[in-house]
Amino acid sequence: MEENLKEKVKEVFGKNAEEYVSSPIHAKGDDLPLLVDWLKPEEGWLVLDIATGGGHVSKALAPHAGTVISTDLTEEMLENTARHLKPEHNNIFYVIADAEDLPFLAGTFDAAVCRIAPHHFPHPEAFVAEAARVLKPGGKFVLIDNVAPEDPELGRFMNTTEKLRDTSHARCLPKSEWQALFKENGLSELAALDRKKTFQFPSWAARTTESEAQKERVKQHLLSADENTAAYFQLITHDGHIESFVIDEWMALYEK
Image (cartoon, rainbow, N blue to C red; front, side, top):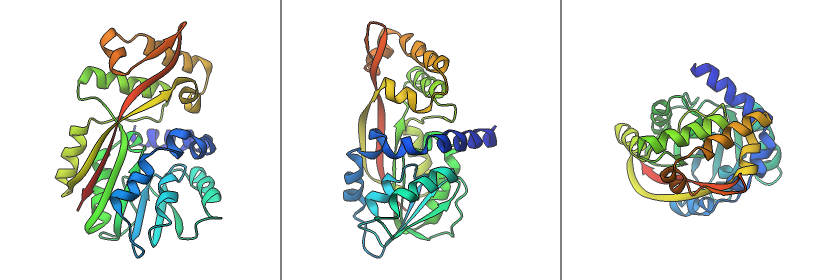
């Protein structure tokens, strides 16, 4: 099952590489300047960007760090990202890598970042262990990802929504699970921020759905939300069409 999911990740992201470079949610989030402010990378730092996708973290950090190693599981995605970034940034290097089995020695990096990707990882516990392993003592780690509400029913609704829309989705964890994993791996929280993120339904659904029938299944699932669920996710509809909804995102800074 795990290997099937990872193959699905490669398939979905390989086909949609360009969309993830240009997606406003990925490219223009105000978390990118905040990431630089939190990390305060130095000229001599070696920084790891885990599951870079469209390369937005690498692009944000490259002007401030010595070297950025930009990794992704999907070769087509990484090649596309490199084409966009290479003309402007000569201190970014690209490595095909599995976030749950990083090909780097222990204690290599001054900082590591993973943004809007861990919900695709089958084994988040392996990902956190690997991120902690490759950091130097005192190294910083930033996680930015969609998180499930702590309420199990709301969490199930959110994850079902994501899975219906994107078959490469694994699971959005609630904050409490992430915090437990970080603690188990010797990482201490320095800062954290709860955020709300709005998805415009038409563009969000179109990015990974493979047919109108799949898009319709996502729509009907969202429309099936009871009053409490619809209110939590701030579901906005008009004449039977979904305009937007809102999910939780968490940004956290940890230190080894």
